[in-house]
Image (tube, rainbow, N blue to C red; front, side, top):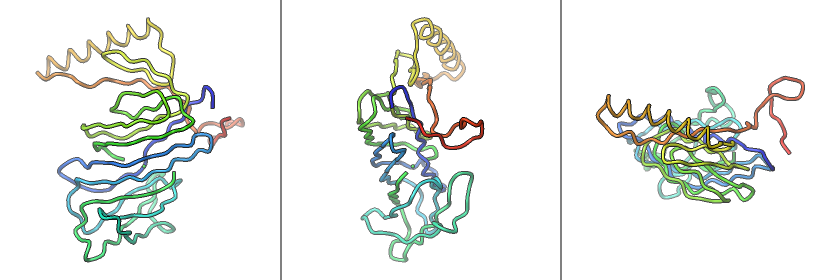
Amino acid sequence: MRGIRRLFPLLFLPALASAQAPHLTGRAVIAPAEGLLEADLCLSRFSERDDVRFLLSAAMNLRVVTDSVGRPLPYRGEYDGRLVGEAREYVVEVPDDARPLRHLCVSYRGAVRSMSYDLDIECPECAGIYVNGSHPMAGVAGRFASATPRGVLLLAGEVGFVETEALSFVGGPAGPAAVRGFSQGVGEIAGYYEEVMGLPYRERPTFLTFRSVWSERPDGRPGPRAVP
């Protein structure tokens, strides 16, 4: 694992229309040496639904779908679900006494569109963890939260980082000259948008460096690659 960084996108994509942003909570455990991601995630704050569909990466094994009280819900799509890119569509068969559904939990082995989140992440073999919208953390576990709705991306492994008041570098080296140059550029862009919009620019850009677990094989063809 030394020197290797792995990218784990959270590919639980709820196909739920809502006037307010959905909110994601739960727990994820990563085992980079085995290439595994296990997650128990719950989605709330979406409009009441009788018909609920969600997308899950086709590489993930779905364990159970439950409602807000932990009652298992029947679903279909595991073997004949519609494929959307690299994801498989699942349809929750909501019982009459559970309608309308306001809260959905999904447990799987193997993660969303723009949404706020509050997540506990564990990675016993990792040196650092980063979830976009939060500060990177050194160590094997951390709690990451964002009140601003955004796509959720997780980067974990032998990950180092450099933080300044204006930005972060995650997963790659960043010398003093690079930090000064990028910080100045980000500051100029933020100043422009603050002047045009008349609002403070509060986002802190993060620059990522990583090696994907899906890359070219030694023969040049694309495919999964084993990383020592």
